[in-house]
Length: 160
Image 1 (cartoon, rainbow, N blue to C red):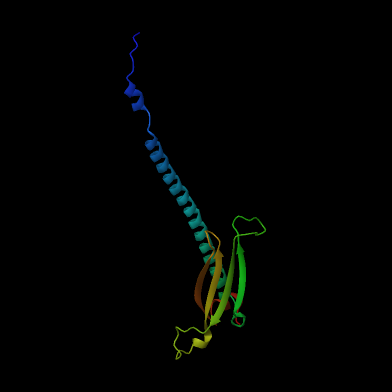
Image 2: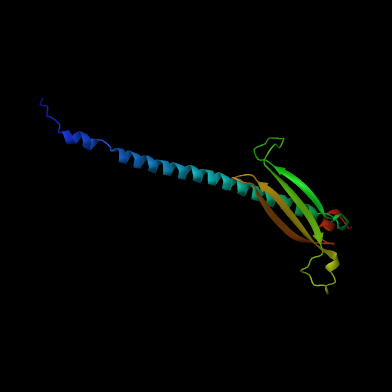
């Protein structure tokens, strides 16, 4: 076997310089920060979307309940509803939804229409505070529907 003597420069050529190591470390740090930032943003977006969808469900539930009320039961009221998807049977955290149901004469119907006194505009307004992120944000949603005195509730419950 023949041993050859290695050149002095070949050993240096196989190693990384300190500048290359620092640049590679900086690139790795930037990529890691971007990855964890995107992951955090994704979880925050999912939570926000979940709360918004729950708000829509609450408003639809209240509107459907109001549509089944008879004419004498239509009135303004407020309500609260907790939502914590991580809780079991006892809600401990999550979002608290504050709602207001208001009934008024519909402004979209002209005053000359004879059926206007037999119609009500029902508005469900919902507020909640999102505690995700650096500072709490207040969200607001509302839905409207019109209810007739001789509407759906008469077919279900009978005449008023």
